[in-house]
Image (cartoon, rainbow over all chains, first blue to last red; front, top):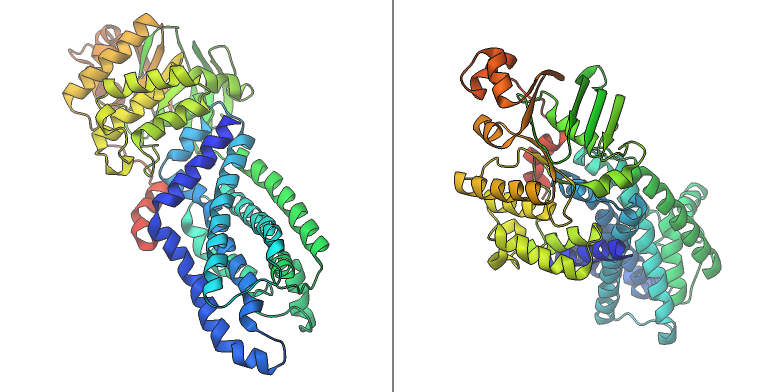
Length: 248
Length: 260
C-alpha cells in the first residue's frame, strides 16, 4: 500500500513542479476550444444543431485528459532513459504495485488537467445542463484518465526508446482524438467512420461526459460506463503483464 | 553469499558472459575487474534480477534470482554504473522513496536517512532538487540511498567514477566499516586498480565474458610476475583498447535535445 502511495505521490510532485508542462498541455485544448468553438459555432447553429461550445467542451476535456494520460504512461520511457526505472525494478515490491502506483499517479494528474479545462470552459460560456450531476462527470473523467494512462504504460513497456514516439503521436493519439466524436456528432456518420468511432475507446469517454454535462448521449450512459470500465480493467492487466517483462 | 555456476548470457549471436563461475563469501569485499565491455555490468544485472541468464545457476543469499526474485531483491542494495536518481525530486525525497519501497519502518527510515545524508555531506542540501546537483553529489547521494535498507550484499558498479580522492576514501571507509560491523558483503567493479588493491580481499578479472584469473591481489601479481595490480591486469587482459557498443539509451540521450 505504501509503495503505491509513494509512487502516486511522486507523479503528483513531478506534475506540480513542472509549471511549463501544466501550461503547455493546456494550450492545445484551449486553442481547439476557442478556435473551433467560436469558428464553427455559427455554422453549427445554422444547421439547427444548437450551441457548438456546449457540444465540444466534453470533447475538449477528453482531449486534455487523453494527451496528459498517455504521456504520463509513456513517461516510463523517460524513467528508463534517466535510469530511475532500475531503482524501482530492483526493489522488493511486486511489479503490480509499481504499475498500479504509477498508473494511479498519472491518471490523477490527467484528471486534474481535465478539471482545469472544465473550469476554464466556464469562461467561454459553457454551462452544464445540471450542476447536480457534476460529480458523475468527474467519475467519467477519472475513468478516461485511468484508461489512457494504462494504455500509455502498456505501450511504454514494450517500447525500447523514443524512436516510436512520433509514430504513437501520429497513429494513435491523433486518430483516437479525431475519430472519437469529440468534435462532431456520431449520429448520421458514413458507415466506415461510424464503425471506427465505435472501436475508438475515447468515443465512450466523450459520449459519457457529454451525456452528463450536456444531456445528449449517443451510446447511453450505461454502455459508456461499461465499455470504459471493462477496457480499463483489461488494459491494466495487460499493462502489468508487459511491465513485468521489462528487462534492462 | 554469492554462488555463480556456469553462468552465460547471450544477446542474439553475441555472448556477453561466457560460462563463468565464482563465489563470494559472507562478509567479503570482492572486486570484479575487467576492461570495458567485458561483461561486468551484464553479470551484475543477472545477479540483481534485472536480466535473465541464458544458462547457468546463481544463488544469492541462498536464493535464486530467476525464481525467488522477491527474496533476492530484499537481500541486496546497489549503486548502478549510470545514475538512477529522480531529478525532479529532492535529495531527501529520493531517500524517502527508497526507504518506503524497501519497507524500512518510518522511525528507522528517518534516523537512517538523516545519518546517511549527514555522512555524505548532503544534509544541508536535502531539500534541493537533484537536477541541481553536480556529478559527485549525485554519486554520493546514490551511495547513501543504496544503504538506507542496510542490505546484506552491496553491489557497486564503478561507484567512485568521477569522485575526488577525499570523497572516495571517505566513502570506502564507511563501507569497510559496515562490512566489518554488519558483515555486509561487498561486490564492486572499478577501473581504479589501486582501489581494488586497497579495498578488495579477493579479485576476479573478466575479459571477453570469461574469467581469466582470480585470487587476492598478491596472488594475481605473483601469477603474472608483475609488481602492481595494474600491470598484472594489463598482462592478463592485453593492452588493446575496447569499444563498447552504443546502446539505445545512449543514442537516445544524444537526441534528447530535439524533442524536450
